[in-house]
Amino acid sequence: MSIEVQNISKSYGTQKALDNVSFSVKKGEIVGFLGPNGAGKSTLMKILTTYIAADEGTAEVNGNDVVVHAKEVQKTVGYLAEHNPLYLDLYVREYLEFNASVYKVAPKRIEEVIVLTGLSSESHKKIGQLSKGYRQRVGLANALLHNPDVLILDEPTTGLDPNQLVEIRNVIKNVGKNKTVFLSTHIMQEVEAICDRVIIINNGKIVADKKLEKLISEEQEQLIEVEFNKAVTVDLLNTLPNLKTALNTHDFVWELTFTSSIDSRPAVFDFAQTNDLKTLQLNQKNKNLETVFREMTK
Image 1 (tube, rainbow, N blue to C red):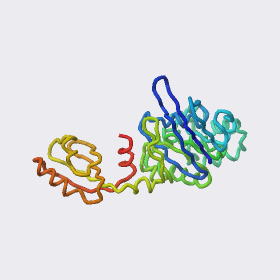
Image 2 (image 1 turned 60 degrees about the vertical axis):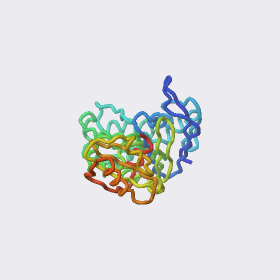
Image 3 (image 1 turned 90 degrees about the vertical axis):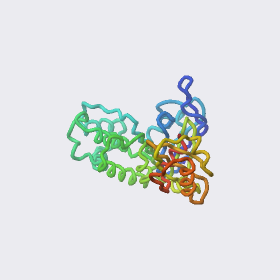
Image 4 (image 1 turned 135 degrees about the vertical axis):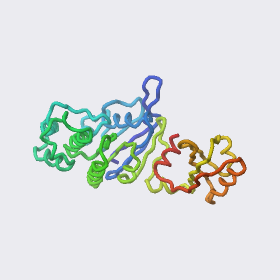
């Protein structure tokens, strides 16, 4: 296994960031690690990259314990942190040359990662002159510099415009052909485009760990979006047969999840008539990663 996590727990004072977390990632997998803010994603990534230690449990990267063999782990992991710390007064090439000397990497590798991450046109500039999107590229280039077996990316597409998103997505997909990629993001479309598998964490616990297609399709549930003409309470909606969840997305619009495979739109229509409501729209929606994520982390 490229990554092996067993019963990891971590607390900050009385706040438990990770609670008995376990999973494994095979070589060559691209895994999306999802969760709300404060769910424990960055904490786990910092443990895997040896920045902090867990309170309980063990973690291995490429067969090396992150505590006992921290140096070996650091040699085989490329890490892009959430806030991407950079030396803003250095030029792009200067920064990469400095890190290449630390890793004892051949100078030709610097040019390779510059081209790979689309930095050629900006490589003569100081990092402080770059946009946020290009600074992310510098961080990704640095993570790839020593040709690591495992890439751990915490919000790698932060600050990128739509065109840059496509380019960096392609870089990650190409890199993932012969490396293990473990990435955190809040952009569900990125996960759907890049990842083979999804792990969802909520309140420090793993709530889902499945192949992306299976996660979205396995539950025989239906999602209905309805807009009423006035406010309605959750208690009243709970009288609908086979209703699993009711989410008020905005104004008088609700997303209703039903456990029945039978079309529930007639039941919603009848519910509206019975309760002196009008349905301004009533649509059956396909489930996607975003709706599954909301259901599992609300």
